[in-house]
Length: 329
Image 1 (cartoon, helix red, strand yellow):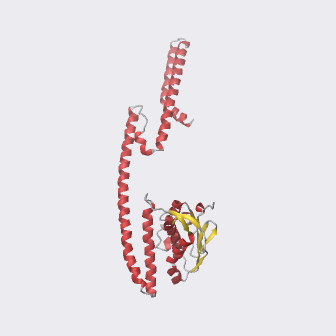
Image 2 (image 1 turned 90 degrees about the vertical axis):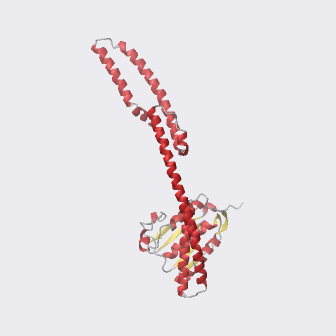
Image 3 (image 1 turned 30 degrees about the vertical axis):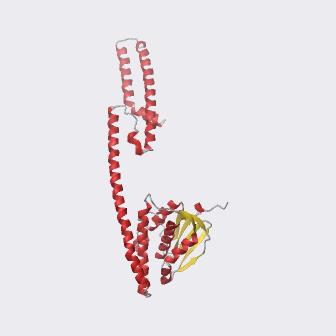
């Protein structure tokens, strides 16, 4: 019905001219005092023929409309599958559409080339920067002073930021190396905690960890990145107190801290790229990328992630693992 109304609107000029011609014909017969019946028969005949032509034209328009709607769902081949033009003007529009599509292809190709060049450069940079970081870590391993421990902690943070860059670059790559296997969740958690152990000790932050005894099917590297990033945020915004890691349900891992929390107005946007909120304005180190990456990675792994927080009381991050509950046959 919607298409039919649109069709009638598109033909309103033709219908108006037809009604005007019929009116002029009747007025001419009336002015010359000719019998109106003499014109009624040809008028009715013309009207029937016009209705038949209109129905056939509407069916043709409907078929073309359906074809174009189908092409819209497969835009990549639209220029080669357009219906035959019914008029020179329609043919001009199709040529214009093809030209626009060709220009879009050229812009997209140029953009893809620039993106590949950028990702290649930063991937090389990430791997190159890891060499001096590793060398400095080896040097600091022989030192056991407060300054050395502080430098080691700062170096570890740098490593985390470098890994974040690498994860960001790989996230949109079609060749992302996901490898799904059965993994022990406790192993992943313990490895993440071990990386932050010195920071827990130096800052006297308590850790409450309850073994999960959970087996799941996932990519170890990417899930480890998520857990490490959540722990990193918990430590960053916890000045004193404890961080707890436990299962709050058979399928939900919770990392809870007693830190500064998140302002209520910031909660709906914490997973947006680049959004730092109130905490980011007070802590200039915040990039607004960490939680965004966690959300993207969890989406790719088929997991859910959500966050609850009370300002100045703490934050809890929940990772939903129920998609990977193993069935015991």
